Length: 148
Image (cartoon, rainbow, N blue to C red; front, side):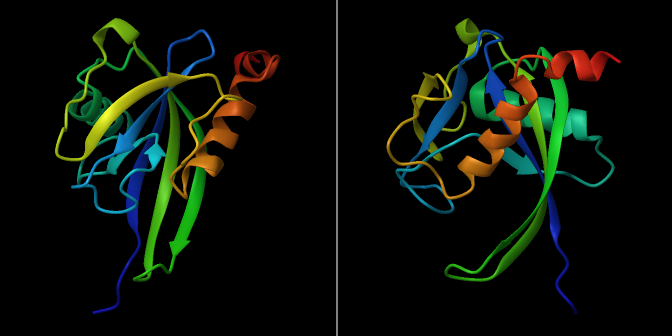
């Protein structure tokens, strides 16, 4: 059987005031323990993108997804240490910071709110590209383009 790429919903949670929520990957994480990352999860069969994002935000961060917007799509090819391939549909998700808590302590050991220009020292290898999409989406005037 020929392997096929999977579909992942990647989400950059934000507070609506410029800060993004990142999680530090714990010892039980699938890859890159100790690295800071935004959230992500697999799209399940028959599920809409928005339903997958809302489910994953609740599972990972114990919070409701208040607003969900698609901000990009990435074709991710990784070869370290085993080749993997997935399509990442990337979302900006507004959450209430007062609701946020670690929902999967077996995967994450710390959460933090960061200004995009003041990120933690050890980012996950996939984080910069997701944050670049978020930064472009959040740029002044970008909202005007979406309204039109």
